[in-house]
Image 1 (cartoon, helix red, strand yellow):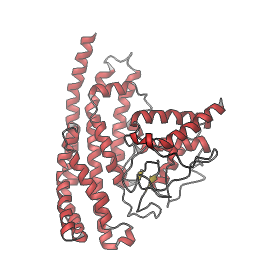
Image 2: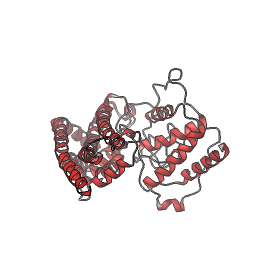
Image 3: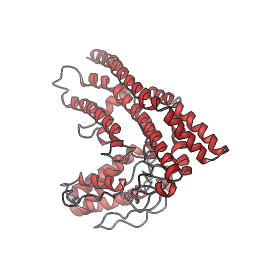
Image 4: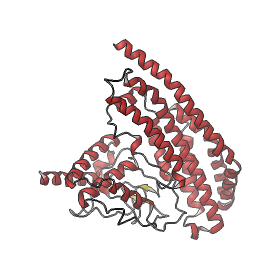
Length: 406
């Protein structure tokens, strides 16, 4: 039986090397594949009490080690089985790109007794320092840094995490997740209820999420961490009700319908939070680069504009498109000042130069700090209040429907 599992595992590894997802999977899903693959081929991760991660380790390396350590105690055959099941799940969730049919043959196969070699380059601009192997396929690509490329590597692109510099751009990883968060926020109530009914209480969607704009555990990641924790608690209530269906007086779907607007609004707030982190991060690194120079921050002003500021403005503008859910479109409207600032500053860059454009960008964001750090949080609070109020309406609708069926 062990030989059969090993053969299936190797076949699945080869299949995942050639897989090109139609939609970019999440970082959490990529790390899940990586950690299962690592556990399957290498066994338990080193004990953190005897082998801690270096303080100079990159963000991707820390995330990979933490994910692997979470699998401690899992036998290698069981890790192989879970890896195969997780691969099948992700292929169903994220689809298969048409490019897969014409994809080139996979490269060097993973040795039987070692994890896959870290790859270079790819869709996310990986480096030799911190890739998730192609066997851990699926995740967020982010252009040229701090994403996970199409080969599954969590790379840091041109700016590289190998330096441990504070000048590494972090927020594009969050920007890359915005389309997925928008899609999640458009989930209808029937679809939400159906998904919750099929999900176990330990496999909640929010439980698998992580901060996207900073290294988990840092002060900059605290707002995202708090939001994810809040959403996870609300989701856990919905999932717990599935097991109490027969003993609870009120049908589980009624409480779940009450929590559905909260789920969507929290997704919209997460999107807004990503953009707040983007503008704070881009303004901070721009100011550092102007004062200390690109040699110190290891990133140029041109790169900041082309890979963080302009993509941020374009993504913010896309939130107002007609196909977006109402909470997302409201976030898009609230971010129109950011889009306008970026467009004006880009015009200055084209007509005068990158330095004056960067100065104007930083100066404008500083002068409008009250809007970003006070008005937007209050709008988020108002959104939470509205979601709870409207939740009662959807709960009553579901209760009325349940009474009619009975």
